[in-house]
Image (cartoon, rainbow, N blue to C red):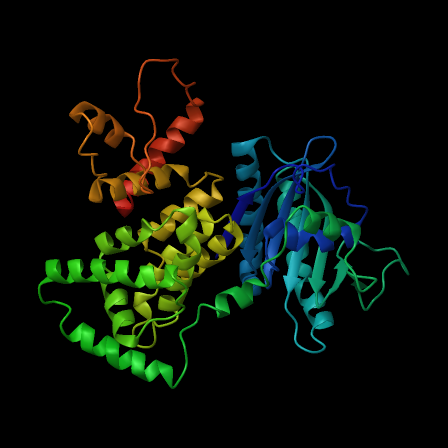
Length: 422
């Protein structure tokens, strides 16, 4: 079962007064702003913390297709949210539950009846954990229904519109003003990663066939060739290019299957490079045409990595979940997914990536400077060519909390195994 977890601040609208949700309509409207995308075919659970019921952790899981799996899915949802909340703060006092369905014409009502038993399983699972259900909503086709409302005449049988007017409600307006906006639906984001169709697919397939035929020859030379081509194509994308030819794409896709080449690609991680890098990785992922779908995890993982660095954790999370469906054992995707969902910043991985880039491209010393000064400048060099002050005497930085230290250690071990920045 696919899951996505994220820990959000107790006030989802940063630097603003807390947003008070006045009822189910506000709860339904705020959901895509909490996740960063519109969920579909999803279970979403939002923890509520403390006596004032501030928002805590948020998790999203796929709705299992088989009803016989619903009881286990409900138990897993409750256990996951409680464990995530306890790791970061405290167990939730209550929970908001959502079942989200992407309907075809006239499918809302049948889906509402079909999913009602799952809503009951979720309520029972959370109550068994000692967590009360504040509200349980079904959201489909721009309307919401409450699974908990049993008062005759209270709710419209056809559902309640999320938007009563053409414009957004106050909750969505506050979220938008704070710079929060959904990236689109999860389904649409995944669809945008699909391989290209004909006629371009045939030309790309032939190029991949040619490259694959000689891929076993001289692996070290091919690795160097792929690295040089990577730098060349990235420079073109930095200059505004949005595509490259089929042969170059095939050489890059084949090269990225080598972890050393893939990790070299991950070094394009500085703010000025992220836009071009994301365009290139998306372009290459879309060139993984049949029967070369197995090449996709490498560029997709790089797309998730650069999305995370660019602050788009919603896209990163969706892309990583998609990768792990394609290849559950892809270690770097597992590492990034675990780190992102655990609420860790990318800084630790970025440190290793920058160090490796600096090692491959050491700064050149000024010929007129003293050797000692050149070594001091080189010690703190950054990938952009600048230098940070070399470590010296002074107050020692505060030690991180014990739990944070252990998480750093686990992250470094996982990075070593995945080979990024190592």
